[in-house]
Image (cartoon, rainbow, N blue to C red; front, side, top):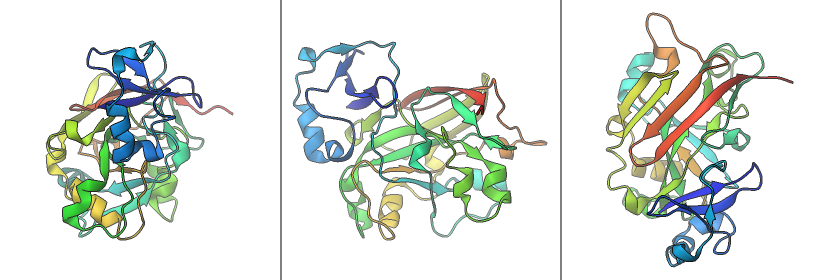
Length: 283
């Protein structure tokens, strides 16, 4: 299934992309694409719905973040061998975990706002894991039982804030609008191999990132198991799993940074596409 949320910010309706390409309103079936709706029982309830009897939503309506009420927005840093190489960083011995503010979450095609005092705004196409059942101290062989599905994420970053302002990476990752997710959650039964997905990102039509989840250092099951050793995961939590090479900071001979007027366009095989206009912060 491809599950999404459609409507104005704060008033999104739960929806499903039907096989005929129409968007069907799930409001009579579930209250949101969030929390317990993403558990096996919640997904089974949606599967049983008669989609043909559900109202059709306009394809022109705004698509919101594909998961509502996200409890934790967790990220894995330097998780692609080729991306680590372009940054000059050593291959991590263990996954690098940082948090992205849930207030950064926006819809897949909403505007990205460059924050006040920003110097080095950057892009990162990433595979997102959506948690479906509570995970605590999960063994590797059981990790996939806790995954509801996957989504496309743009882990927008401010490198100056991230690496030159002291402390952890979080301050360069959590600005408002720095977390476009969606367009939809694709349930794991529709993704045959999450470690074999092509992924790409363009800025103003120029392709900068053109990679594959094949080069992830720590795969999906390893990430879920590992993170669960340090914090419990709940249904609706989202984990962003790292980015392939081609980020702005890695461009040679000079880095390329986002600026107002840019358009980012990105996608992952089977998970859809996003397009964001980049705008300057205004008070």
